[in-house]
Image (cartoon, rainbow, N blue to C red):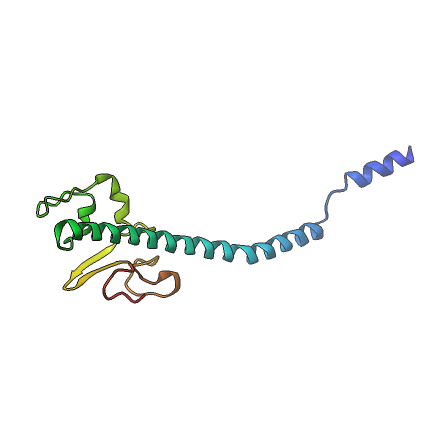
Length: 145
């Protein structure tokens, strides 16, 4: 009978507060190491996705230029027909192409010798650094990259 009582008292004992605190500190330390890397990877992915969208739009602009002999006046040429160019037909299904990863409209301007196509980045403001930096299309004239 003594052996049975001894067995019951040790098995139902549970964890002490100190043991639980040690486990929580270990888990917190691991999260402090892992979480910034996950966030950095997510932000890199957002920038890459925006760059891919910019490249897709640049391709569309090049197609428009080849068909119409001029650069489009706005990015709406992607979704809408352009009355000044009979050879061009917009595709309304491509509306999601007009916004960057953060839901902001791409910035587009036509200049004398080309165009400027960019995203304002994660902060949605001109300028910025790191992940908030403006992102320019490779074919843009006047881009910083």
